Image 1 (cartoon, rainbow, N blue to C red):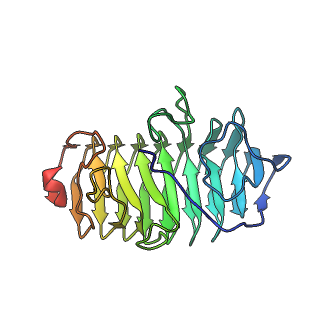
Image 2: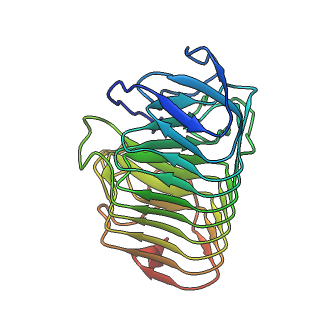
Length: 258
C-alpha cells in the first residue's frame, strides 16, 4: 500500500544562505512521489545556515551540505525524498504548515518505491524539531540527536490525504510525536537509543480490510522505553507486515501490546 501523498498550495521559493549553487527550477526526473506541490528550486552545494521559504528539492546525484542549521519556514516545503545526499551538521527546524522530506530506501513506500534498490545516506548532526508542521517524511536517515514533533497535520481528514512516516532511521536521542492529525502515521523499523513517546495522534485512513490503519508502531529497536497514550487508533502493528518492538526499558500504555 502506498502511504505517501501530499497536496499543498503553490508557493514561491526564497533560499537564504551563506553560499549557494542552484540549478534551473524544473521537476527532478529521479525524485520520489510528490512531496511538494511543485518541484520548486533545485538546491545543492555548501551552506552555513540555510532557511528555505517555499518549495525546494535536492536533485538525484547532487549533495547538499549545511554546516549549521536548516530551517523550513512556515508553509515551506523541502523535498529530499530523492536519490541525492543531504548532510546537516546542526539542527533541523520545521515550521507551522511546513513539510520536511529526507531520505530514500527500498522500504520507503509500497511494493515499487521510486528509490529502487538504493538506500541514501542522509545525516543530521543535531535534532529535528517540528512544531505544528504539516508533515515530515523521514526514511533511512542517521539523526544523532532527538526527533521531536509537536502538533501539526491537516487535521483528521483524508482530503488532503497526508501521511507522516518515520521509517528505517537511526536516532541517537529520543523520538517524540505528540498531537499530529492526518491520514496515517507510523514509526517502523527504527533504531532509537533513547525513549519513544507517541501520544494523542490521530490517523483516519483505513486498511485493506476496512479497519483503522494508522499509529503503526512496529519492528523498532528502542534502548529506552516505548510509551504510547491517547492515540486514535491505538498503537498497533496493523497491516505493516512488521513484528513486535524490541525495547530495553518499559512498554507503557498502548505499546504494552506491540
